[in-house]
Length: 451
Image (cartoon, rainbow, N blue to C red):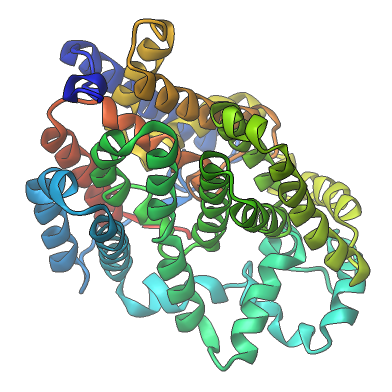
C-alpha cells in the first residue's frame, strides 16, 4: 500500500518563490518592452501588451460573487478536495469552476461579459445566416478564407476549421439563438475541462495528486478568458479526449478508446492548433503503455475515431489541409504578418504566466526537479511531472511556430490547463491559491479584456 509520503512534494519554498519571482519579472519585461514597441512602431496590435486588453478599472454585478468564490475556495478548497468522496469531488469541482468563471465574466456585466462576446465582427455568430445550407457552406468554406476572397470570413471563422462555426450554427437551429446562449455554452462546457484533467490525473498519477491539484484547476486565472471565449469550449473537448484516452489505457477499454478518438478528431476540426494535443496524448500512451501492450486492439478505435470525423468533413466538402494552408496565408495578410516574432516568441510565455499564475511557475520548478530525480522520486510524482512536461512541450512548439503571435491568453487555454496540475507539488496550498485568486481578480477588474 502506498504511504501518504509517497506523493508528498519535496521541500523548497524559497526556490518556489524564486520561480514565481522570475515569472513576475517575465511579465514585467513583456509589459515594459511591449509598451515601448507599441509606442514606437505600433506593430503589436494590442492596447495593453502582452494581453489583448485595455486599461479600465471597473467592478460589476459579478464582483461580490467572484470574491465569495475566491475566499471560499482558498479557505476550504484544499480540505474539501482531500476528504470529499471522489464521485462528489468531480461535480463539486465543475460547479465551483463554473461559478468562478461565470462570476468573473459578470464583472463586465451580462451584455459585455457574456452576450456580446461571440457576436462581434470577428466572431462566429456573424456568419450563422450563411450556413442555411450546411453542405454547400462546407464545400465553399475554403473559398472565403483569404482576405482578398469574395465575402471573406471574419477572423475567427477563417482561422478555424468549420467545426467551430458549425457548433454555433447547430445551437442556433436547436433554438438556442444569440450571443447569450452561445456564451453560456462556452462557459458551461469549458468549466468541465477541469473535471477532465482530474480524471486524467487520477488514472495516470493517482488520486492523491489529483486531489491536491483540484483547487488550483478550479481557481485558475485562466477563468478570466474561459468566459466566454470559444477557446474554452475547444479546451474542454481536447481535455476530454485526453481523459478518455487515459481511461482507455488504464482500463483496457475499447469504448473509451473509441470515444477518445472521436473527440480527438473533433478537436482537429475545431482548431488547427489542437493537433498539438497529440503531444499530450503521446505522453498518456507512454504512461499507459502497459495497458496498450496487454490489449493492442485499443489502437484500432483510437485511430478510427479521427478517421471517421475526417471522413465526414471531407465527404461534406471541406479539405482540412487546404484550409490550413490558406489560413497560413490569411495569417500573413493580417496583423499576424506584422506582429514582430522577436517580441511575441517570449512575450507569449508572459501571457501563459498570467493565465496559469505564479503558483504554476513554482509548480513547474518542482516538476522539473522531480523529473531530474525521477529514479528516486515516487512513481506517481514522476508520472505527473512527465504529463505536465508534455503539455509544456506542446505549448513551446505552438510558440516557436510563429502562428500564435499574441492573443495566446485564450488561444493556448487547451495547453495551459495541463500546466496547472504542477501545483499539486506545492506546499502551503492556501497561500498559493490566494495568490492565484488575487491575480485573476486584479486582471478582471483592472483590464477590459478583448475576448
